[in-house]
Image (tube, rainbow, N blue to C red; front, side):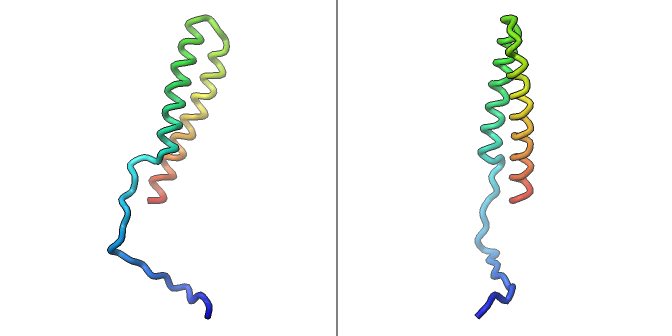
Length: 74
């Protein structure tokens, strides 16, 4: 008739937690590439490297967030 609030749990079926979520790996790759681009830009004397540094900071925060979220879910 309605939901009684009881949940059926099956202890025999368990999934192994992934060591690191896929989005965290993508964000880490973007961070590494942005740092490399910032170094190249600054070596060439371009101020565009500041944008790359900001992108590296954003992507490192995303990597940290998705890594922590992946640990708390599993």
